[in-house]
Image 1 (cartoon, rainbow, N blue to C red):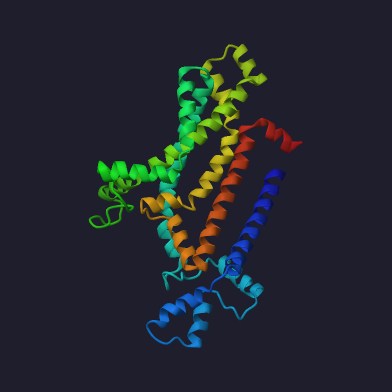
Image 2 (cartoon, rainbow, N blue to C red; image 1 turned 45 degrees about the vertical axis):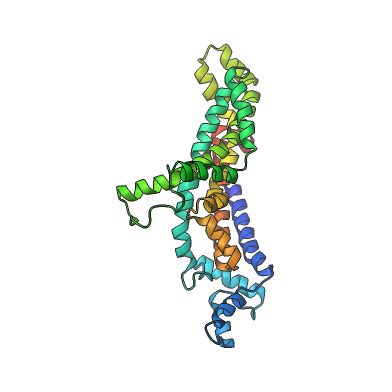
Length: 332
């Protein structure tokens, strides 16, 4: 219990530091987003100094207040669930825009990460158990070659081959918005799956090598441990030794990577979403950077930070469950 409390306190401090950096870094960057808005509005008519001040206050960019005053105003709004208004989509609230985009990224990235992790770890277990065999001789070099391919290049290649040449999948979008209305209907769900299949497949194939090679190397080391040799000497079945004794401990290094990958899902797969014109939080982040949309940037970074910290906290707890040695160290 003391370990859990210590970890919770640590993550609370980490969240506070992340929120603080999230506030100050955009404001220390060059450029003035309010001036950019005023420049656009000036094309349609005169913008008075009072209007400029109102815009700055609306977006939480009142430069007449010291930074520490703006910081505490930001914290107050944050605790009340007010993420502010988007500059590029004014006057739409940031929470509404993120709420629309984030589920596309979670759906795409979540499926890809989970499938890549499961398939990659399973292949790593099999290849390590049959090391030196034909399976190991073929899969290991193939995965090493695959890991060297940038995933955005793989996305471009798959888009050109399967969408442009073969016309098996749509070229862009999250669903057929021209003919189908969003809703829990068969047509909408099938359209979403059809549009997401190729981006998800690209992400799975691109991540497969890392999961498999990490699991293989860890599994080979674990197979030489005394408790695995003892399990074999006791006459236990190969399946039980392979999965329950060896794989259970060999998967621990991948658990941390899986937690980080799950947390990063919220941030979207930026390049994949750009290549496939797939609606998601990653593309929204790119637009926010280009438009100097402080409220959008802060909110997206905050959500990514909370997701990564939450995933790492769960991985911490999972370590305690999977590895008895960790429990003994915690109780010592």
